[in-house]
Amino acid sequence: MKVIAFNGSPRKNFNTAMLLKHALEGAAEAGAETSLVHLYDMSFSGCRSCLACKSRNRPRTGLCVLRDAATPYLEEALNADVILLGSPIYFYTESSSMRAFMERLLFPVTRYEKERSLLKRTIRTALFYTMNITEAEIAKRNPPFPENFSLSVIEQSAFFMKRVFGHCETLLCTDTMQVQDYSKFYMDIYDGATKKQRHDEVFPLDCQRARELGRRLASASDLQDKESS
Ligand SMILES: Cc1cc2nc3c(=O)[nH]c(=O)nc-3n(C[C@H](O)[C@H](O)[C@H](O)COP(=O)(O)O)c2cc1C
Image (cartoon, rainbow, N blue to C red; front, side, top):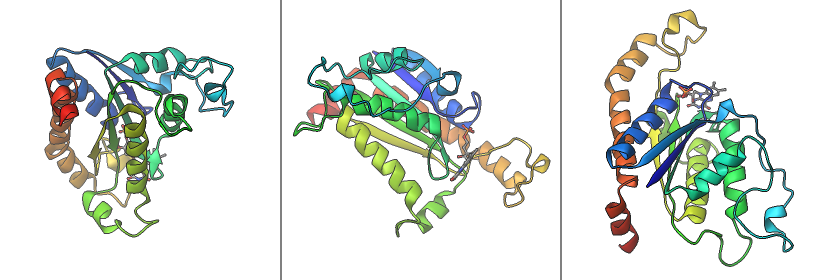
């Protein structure tokens, strides 16, 4: 059982990375071989719309034909049993590196045919999002569109992941602590003490949820149960 996680935050030890690390620990507890890739360590681009992955003159491998730093990791992801994608919300969507990575991962396995995925097997996937917005703010904005845009982006990403890989779950981590000491920054709309309290009390629970999700996704028997149900 191979589980690969991609961190779409430029920060390697903050909220998103911590959630992914806990998810991988859970997966390792279930016996999986795990790895964590930091997208901001790599120089790569999004889809160039060359459409070579859809060409009748080439073998359809599901792997993006562009060759850059993302290539070996895209290949690893397609050979994995579980793919975890973690991203901070930036202006109500995934970070630019995560968007670019998702384009490269999803488009070559997406078919413009009746059958929409090139994959012959299920790869379990999960999307992890961290954000400043609170649960109450999300509830307030949902509906109407476009105010609920942050949620619709998440739902759309989950939809595309599920269509291609056959399985996708999402874990939201809201009201995160963006900086350790708010008094050092022009961030007056946030109360540092309240943020810290939330971080101390709720973030460990978010990490626990991530750990449980990682463990469950990496558990082969649970995979069979879910797929046959
Ligand atoms: C460029 C930028 C844009 C952001 N936009 C949003 C946003 O639209 N909504 C939101 O809730 N948080 C937003 N945030 C806050 C981050 O999503 C939040 O702090 C997240 O937990 C950071 O993840 P990290 O700690 O893993 O880096 C933004 C942060 C940055 C740096």
